[in-house]
Amino acid sequence: MGKATGALLGLAIGDAIGRVTEFKSVEEIAAVEPDWRRLPLPTKALVTDDTQMTLALARGLRTALARGPLTPLRLERPVREEFVDWWRSPQNNRAPGMTCLRACERLSHEKYRWQQASDVGSKGCGANMRVAPVGLIRELDARQLSGAAQLQSALTHGHPTALAASDLTAHAVRKLAEGVPPAGLPAVLRAYALASRERYDEFWLGDLAARWYGASPQAVLARGWDDCLKVLDQLQSALAAPDLEADPCLATGEGWVAEEAFGTGLLCFLLLPDDPVAAVRRAAYSSGDSDSLACLTGAFAGAHHGEAAWPQEWVERIEHRDELLELGALWD
Image 1 (cartoon, one colour):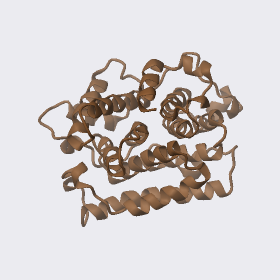
Image 2 (tube, rainbow, N blue to C red):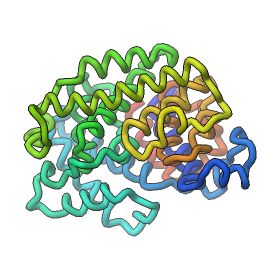
Image 3 (cartoon, helix red, strand yellow):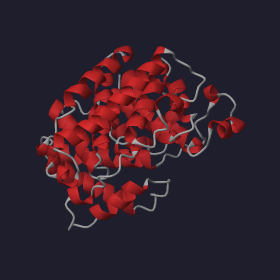
């Protein structure tokens, strides 16, 4: 079925479609392409920082796993190196987020422990737009998956909501790849969020919480999970009265922040669970952070359907195709 390959290709395809529509209103998009169902993949299908950072994380994960079972130190070292390489790359000119840029600059200095480099005030979607590879590695147990998802977020985005949304996004990818039916996914995710609300894993996060303000690490992290539970409520309301013609950002948010990117990306997939191409088009044809939304939608759809979800002529054109296929094959 190629679930890992499908997810990696899907996120890059969504990213490339949304790259053209990001920063545009629905009206501005409609002036060029009136029908969202016909939104094209550009002839030169370039991706943004979303796919670039996903590949950086994926490379770091591959290196870490080649050294043994996944642990915090084994993950942090190669992912930190990959993020810094991305920050230094001349190809890092695809409208990258300021939080990622500032945090990666700090990560480039050995004097900073990663907990010091993290921006604990930011819950931008850069935390979870890149997390899909964590959910695709079947050898990770539940604690490793959660810990790795939160740690990779916290290297740049240390806000509790960023950690929670990254964890929830990786969990959604894992469950879809395992065959959970799309209609049943929101209930699975709600149960996971409720069970995770006050679970601060010091083994994976160390003393990150020393930079938070609150009664306890558990209480602060609970607020992040509550943000995710709120967006799951909005998702359920939108699915109860589905409107394919409405801008999805009106239901679950524009996606500039992590929990909204998760919610709106998932909404677009769940509105069109049997039509992955239409789902990424719907996500990209939106008023918010269109490339990140379509990137997440593509990851969800690809994890569910596998690599057959995507037209071969699109796959042939996507930037970084060979590396996406190589990593997909590794984890399939």
